[in-house]
Image (cartoon, rainbow, N blue to C red; front, side, top):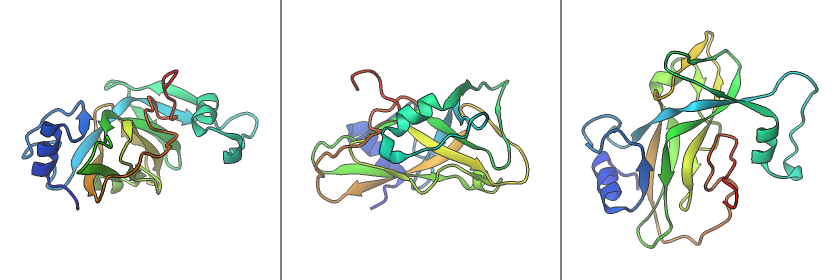
Amino acid sequence: MVLSNVEIVRALNTGAFKIKNLPSLDPSERPFNTSAVDLRLGNEITIPKSEGEPIQLDLRRGSIAKFWAKNSEKLPIRGDHPYVLEPHKFILANTLEAVDFPITGNPCYCARVEGKSSVARCGVLVHFTAPTIHAGFNGPITLEMINFGPVNFLLFPGMAICQLIIEEVKGCPADAPNQFKGQTNAAGERPPGG
């Protein structure tokens, strides 16, 4: 069952889950839509390396987070210095907001991150086939972005970039391993000991 804006705020106020850094908790104002909450782009872009020796990603060799940490560049963005996402360019980015969907009994919640139509109509895809934010996940949400449009697209920190659709999970799930739970950046890295 998808939560309405009113139910999202109610659940936030009772501590059923958390969305840190929301600019407002009024369900009739931004960042809320009737059945979603908009999330904003963080202030750092992770750019996979594409020059030099060809790099091969083999998921059998271990952590995706370690691979991207080693084979990408982190670039800060500012309002006066946006990132220019060129056509056919792939990057990783985080949301400014961090979420926490604890497994603490009934009800339990999960979410889906989806694109915004205003961004999609520019040809920009904000996630690839991985919209699920599982119950038990905490941290900022990584966006796998590519520009399929014909023109450059400017990425500013704080811009509304995606929307979060929150759902109630039927039954309380058992906690399960998740390599990105507690991530601190778009590569998926966790703090030491995390």
